[in-house]
Image 1: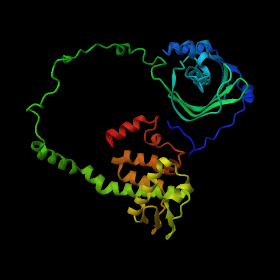
Image 2: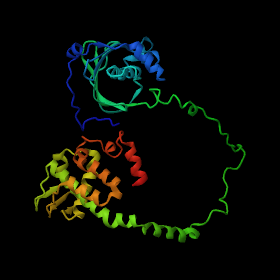
Image 3: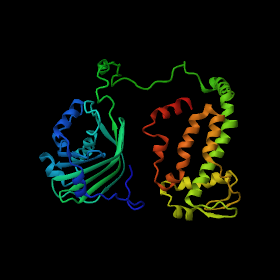
Image 4: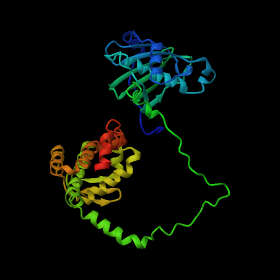
Length: 374
């Protein structure tokens, strides 16, 4: 995560605790919930079982909990913005939403927090009682995504969590119960050198010198370069992909407000301010204009450029489909570009997380295929 001091603003999502308490009224048995979590092999100690009452909405993905700080941590509770033990109980509030699942005979399973987009602490607690409101926008068997708000006893907001994501812990619904043999292992003992033994030795004569293996390595490199798919990629596919990348860049800059009329003067620092490009991506923003210069669209250097050619703003979806149809053997590279290209403007302005574009948590199979088959 990143600590934000002054560069960005946190846009709070307004909520009304009295209104929430009026509509989120169906009780959820807390003891039964903790027992179910224990059956799923998640043992919660007393400080982590701070939920005293839990309610859910009849149809919406909303829940409300009443938290009471355990006596064992009260002496240090006010030293924190939110005590870690109590924070875990706050996260458990969304378990109340899981009780709306259609088949209650099926185990809820364990969902563990894995990511939070943004956090804002408004004020510190002033008592040992808290209320927590949770709302989900996405919920599947594999993950849940939503927001959390924490209030004090008077209904004042203490903290809010945006983009709170929890991931299902595989096996916690008992689906691997039949694989008990995987639980066992055996020790593999390795010899360890004595303290008085010399640990440094010269490499053996069996290790060939670099000069002796260079001809064979050069031959192997030539064979790899001669492979049909290598030649097809670098001679045919990559130039087409490069032009499509330039197309995505131009569309993104146009979306941000840049005019590509021939003769338009461009000052990069000024555009950074106008487009609100975040500091993390200033170097990337400068590099974009170097790419446009190489593509013959702008000329200049440093901070100042000038448009010398208006880009051909083609239908990028059709262009992408055309390349994918012509080069299906490189579909993984094309898919990655299709996922990242349309989000360039969002990445530059900080509204899109580039890590999630390249490594989306819900598409690990595609990521593995890209590295194995790409």
